[in-house]
Image 1: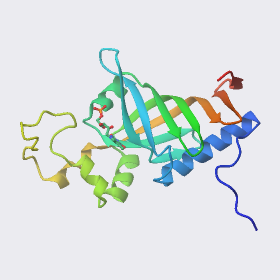
Image 2: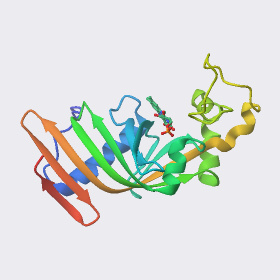
Image 3: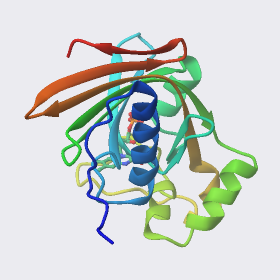
Amino acid sequence: MSAVPHPAPDPVQLDELHGRVWAELTRAARDRGHGWRQVTLATVDHEGAPDARTVILREADASQQVLRFYTDARSPKAGQIEQQPQGLIVAWCPELAWQLRLRVQLSLLASGLAVSSRWASMQLSRAANDYLAPQAPGSLLDAAGAAHEGPPAGENRGHFAVIEARVVSIDWLSLQPSGHRRALLGADGARWLQP
Ligand SMILES: Cc1cc2nc3c(=O)[nH]c(=O)nc-3n(C[C@H](O)[C@H](O)[C@H](O)COP(=O)(O)O)c2cc1C
């Protein structure tokens, strides 16, 4: 039996493309080496200016069309999301030669079972330290850049939060030697676009 080549050739049907995009997002959430594992999440700040940062894709739920990220509930992006839930995710995968621009509706989950169950499964990992700093992300430090003393780390589980991104539309661009292709996959249908 021959192995299935990866990446497979680009889909030629729009409904097949939608499934392939979600299959790749699901793979990216599990595979540290996938190009879509690190994505750019853009939001709008309190003055209406754009803001963007790299985040790690933790979960992709194709049935709900939802992506999930982990963050510190004190970070500026958390407040931005609560004030303006519309966001944009940009992702490029060199292996696939696919770019995604995802229009998303964001929500911040800072308490409840969805948060505590995820914290329980990661609190002993090295990544847990990202959410245990006594200072909020972006806080001013002294000249040496040293963190000031704060409460014991273990008491700070409350700073761990989950960002949920409900995907509203997908702008897919494929750059292939045989020609570039682009499609818009939205709630009101799918269509090919001029790249
Ligand atoms: C490779 C990489 C991965 C990152 N992953 C995350 C992440 O999953 N969640 C997160 O909140 N910040 C992550 N960051 C840090 C953010 O890019 C950002 O600097 C920080 O969250 C503060 O963002 P804000 O000030 O816009 O809230 C990552 C940064 C890099 C370089």
